[in-house]
Each structure stands twice: as C-alpha cells, then as structure tokens.
Image (cartoon, rainbow, N blue to C red; front, side):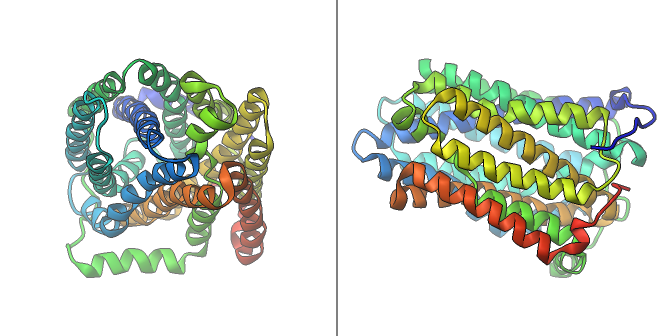
Length: 413
C-alpha cells in the first residue's frame, strides 16, 4: 500500500466527532452483545427439539426477519435523513432499540421462551435500523473537514470493529452465565449511546433539506444507478458478503463442528474483528493514496479465500487465523467503499445514498445469514461455508470485469 501522512491526523480534536465516535462505539458494542445473545439463544432453544440443520436454518431466519422491514423502509429512512435533523433521527432509533433489547432481556428470564416473540422483536430492530443507518452515515461527514474524511471513516470503522472484538467475547461470557444479563448490558449501552448525542452541539440538519415524497426516493435511486463507481462499490459488497456469510454459522461451528462451547463461540466471533482492527489502525494512520479500486477488489478476494479456509478447518487456531484474515480483507474493502461513496455524494443526497448502501449492506448481512442457514440445511454447515467462500471469490472476479471504472479508481479524493 502506497501511503503518505495527511495533515491534522488527530480527528478527535473535533469535539463533535469525538462524541459521535463514542456513541457509535457503544451502539456497536450493544449490537454485538445482542447479536451474540440472540443467535446463541435461538440455536439453544431450537436444539431442544430440532436437528443441527433445522436449528441452523432458524438461526438464519433471525437475519431474514431483520432484513424484511429494512428492505421496505430503507428508502423512506434515507429521505427522512435528508429532511430532518440527523442527530434527532438517530436518538429516536436508539430509544426504540433500547426498548426492544429490554424486552428480550425479560423474555430470557423464562426457562424455555417461544421463538415467535424473539423473531418479532428482531423485526422491529430491522425497522429501526432502516432509519438509523442512513442518518448515522450521513451525519459523520458533517463533523470533520473534508480532507480528514478518509481518516474519520477509518476511525468509524474501528468503532465498529473494536466493538466487534470485545462485544462477542463479552457476549459469550455473559451468555454462558445468563442471556438476560447479556441483554441487560446491551440495554444500558443503547441508552448511553443515545444520551451521549445530547451533548453533540454541531448542526446536523441537511444543508439543503429535501421535500418529502416519492420523488425524493426516485432521485436517490437514480443517482446510485447512474454513478457506476457508487453502484459497483456497494453491489460488490452486497453479493460478496451475501454469499460469504460464514459468521452466521459460528454458533453451529462452535457447538457441533469445533466443539468449543459458548466461550469458544465468543473467540470465533471476535476473530474477524481482530484482523479488521489491525487493518483499520494502519489505514487510519496511512490512508490509501494510490490504486484504491484495486485494493478494494483484493480485499474482497481475501475475504472469500479466508472463508474457504475457515470452512475446511478442523482446528480452532486455524479457524481463528482464517477469520482474522477475512476480517482484514473486508476492512480494506469497506474503507475504500465508504470513502468513495461519501466523497462523491453531495450532502443533500447523502441520506438517500446511505439508505441504498445500508440496504445493500443489510441484504448482505441479514440475507447472508438466511442464505447460510438454507445452505446449511441443504449442504451441512461445512458445505455451506465452502460454497459461500467460493462464491465470494467468483463475484470479485466478475465485478472486476463488469466495473472497470471502479477497478481503475486511483486516489480517494
């Protein structure tokens, strides 16, 4: 990676960005703990009466029920982010998620909870994310100067990945003792993330607030469709991660393939983020200066190859290394994609473009979980992960040919 130091590397000297980052870290930590708890709880409840393959499918269903409201509401959420104060939108969504995870904590107090209310609450989470993600993404570029945006995005990615290291490990420990305690901890973090934003004084209203209506949504879709760099970047992430969603099967691998239990599950969940944080730390100090498009494709390719190695591994140490490698590759790809999308998109379009990006990311994550569950039902967990890794590599090669302009992107400016 050819890199050169940029001026003013300490983006945390901007008080508003520092508060935003702290809130984002707590939010991501809460998401990770809640995700670990709900995945482990659903699988444990299902295994009381169902086979490994059937239980894996139900774990994948958690992703599907979160994606459906995200699919139907994301474009509305993007228009809302381009119309109203973005900080307020984020705070309202955080309040909804706080109530939801508190409800999950209450359900976890029952010895054998029904899966139906758990899935219903997961659907509400998906709906809240449809509004939170566009407003949150569109707010970040308003808090730092434009020339510091690549560093800010790298630090934002570290807020996610740092939480993804500690969150699964902490979640695994808490779930091993009590799912209710895990959910209760996540409840406190969601609430704290919302409270921190009360002290953010920056103006987060859109520069040119749009008029509500279907026309605004069409404008956002048209912009993404006609901008091949944006379309190629976010669609590459969609299909590569959609196929390579091995992390959705980690409860199955931890319990019935590698036999490492809840604590081992937490280690496996944290491994991708260990690699991602190493990559993000490097990128925060040394942003990519040349051949950014090529590095993005290489990152996705490494993600697919890491998934293949993980699928074939029978040793936890090799599985952890493979997951760390795919996390590092994914981080390089995500950093380039997010920087490109934010830089080329004008402020009055950021909410709607972020909504499309969030929908694609949500599809890749939540539908990826469902796809992994279905393939695990058909091929078994090892076959499903192997299929996904091979598919991710294939998508990378296909997209490199379909979007030559994206592949040839040089500087992130």
